[in-house]
Length: 289
Image 1 (cartoon, rainbow, N blue to C red):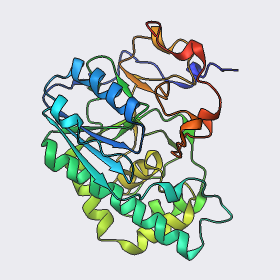
Image 2 (image 1 turned 90 degrees about the vertical axis):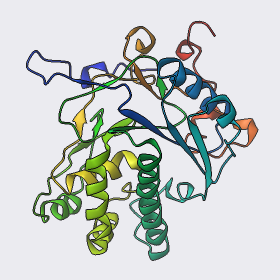
Image 3 (image 1 turned 135 degrees about the vertical axis):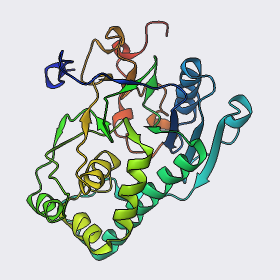
Image 4 (image 1 turned 90 degrees about the horizontal axis):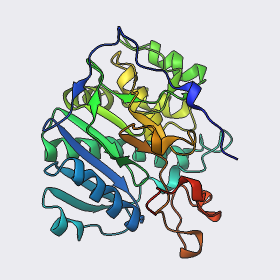
């Protein structure tokens, strides 16, 4: 049964900073695997709203999405190595094994490198990071001054992680996170990445302090926190599995829309394969379907 988690999301307040509209200053990094129908649909919806937006797709060892370049000329697709599959299923009992730490660290570095590739390709002030369960159904904005945004819906209670973050001159603890989908400021990210790359010892300590560190909704808030940038709540996000009224909410940035994901019998092995063992709830499919 779906539960309404809407009370967890903060609302706009009159004294909130005026949001920055996102138009030509927005590009997209799209990370995916083999969710071909979902990616095609998400891109079609994106280009209805932003017809000329530049988008870099990087498939993580999955399908080749280069066929989409013909339909969307400002889209570029790359087939990369699988660096994400190894991190799913990490547990507190297994993630500190040296072999697994090697894989986790590689996953973290590669993901940050891919964002940098997207920034280089898009050449925009902001980057929206999408995956196949994200839909853009209206013009977006970003809270003024925000460097990384998200839902802040999850708690992050790892004392050693907080201790490591606070040991850095500008570091701040991360107690809540939810940076997916996330909008990041490109210039701030490049500074964060540079700081990250120059401190391999600190990165190893962060990786060993939290078994979900390589998940990018954790990785990005933690990386930005090294330079004192906290994840900022984005009130434009709505999540299908947490808000049964998501379709009528009018919020332009949708998360957890997995109606077009491959079904279990197709052999799909992506992160949300277990969820697809059941049929997608009919009430979560858009009305026109």
